[in-house]
Length: 240
Figure 1 (cartoon, helix red, strand yellow):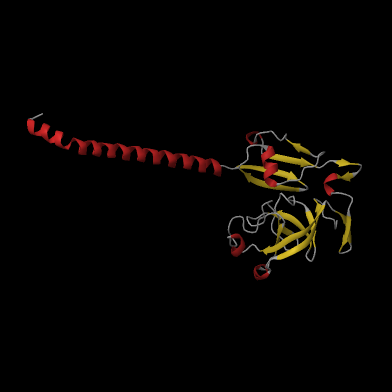
Figure 2 (figure 1 turned 180 degrees about the vertical axis):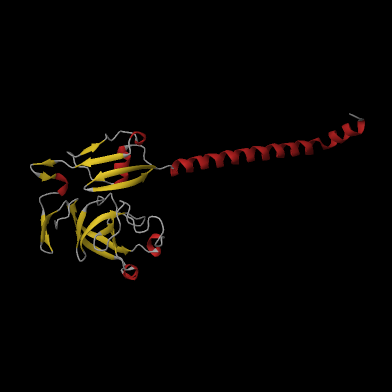
């Protein structure tokens, strides 16, 4: 190294050190961001991973896409009511990698289906039925299969298909919070009639029930109705 080069480096060594530090920091930052993106992508892929399993319960079969890994996780995710004497096959700790079909068997006691509810009786529309509980301050909203409510149009995949896999039906289908009303159960809604919990919704929480109507305009104009009484009955249609 000649004298001129050495003198130049001595005078400007601080700038060279600063430049080197900036380069090193930039490389480290780029590496860190790459790792973060990889982790986020990995987490996203894990979150999006779905198992597909068929659940047979209360006379219906549900084809469910779930992120759960066990039978118990699927039961919890669906919000299914399980009586103390009901049986689940396979066992709840079974991994979904080992099974693609889950069956919930309702057992009887003294010739009465336990899941049908308690001894309380009510009569509506000429039908006397027992019920599990009463919700006295429920909220009602309405929806249709149209784009305004579901983001789907006729011909789209899953158009008109409920969370439980049934096809929506005016006069039967409602969406509920499974933590409050079990999916697959019937209810009587004052001022509306007998309906079945077949669907869920992101805005359907706690005591809110979303009633399905074919008429999209009617559903849009339905609004919000408060303090409605609902009799939660059980998995069997009391009219049959």
